Length: 312
Image (cartoon, rainbow, N blue to C red; front, side):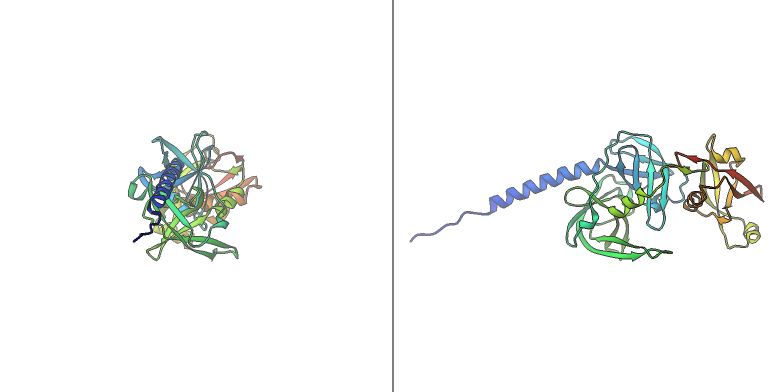
């Protein structure tokens, strides 16, 4: 009796898996070099992505919101650099940081419009301070969300990658190692939400090359009850000045450390994003009026506006 035999497929399959696993490991190792840890007040607050080699780092707005300028990033090689917030958008939940280093390796950015449901994706971040943790999943859905106070719709990426506190601001990668999203939050306990890379790129492209800045280091603070009553506009927070940048507009106008910024151009100030937005909107004006709380007394200060290269 003759027994017919067939070539085994186990060995080729194993070889393909080995090649895939090795390639995937190299891809993740390269991607980790572009991921930084964003620290706020000495604590690990989130993750960031090197977006350009001249020091531009993208993260979430909520990672740096309320942090003033006391932000540091730790690079993949262990160096810790002070970072400043160039701009941020609380609605899109994205922020641009800059560090004094012009020789960084930027992450490759992919076209998020080419993503498809079921596609394999990876997340890199620093959950609970653990460096470079990688999780994998598939794209679960691409959902459009109407933005607040506008008719614009943004398409967010929902995926099955696992995110934990500390992952915010980190990259969502496709199987080619390209950044296709910035991880932002967890929805329903099991779905992770990311901001598409195309939306991030569009937001970065519309940022002004020069901007009006006061030259202050600030942080939100609660207003005393009597001041809330005096303002009579429902405002509960102001911006406490904790530092003054030498030569800046605030120093020239006479703003002091310890002042609380209440409003600018009659716009109540409760966060850094509002201050930057009002300054940008009034960039063509020669003067702008600032109301501050100093020694328990509300005062008005006129600030001469000058465009500057850096934000503060």
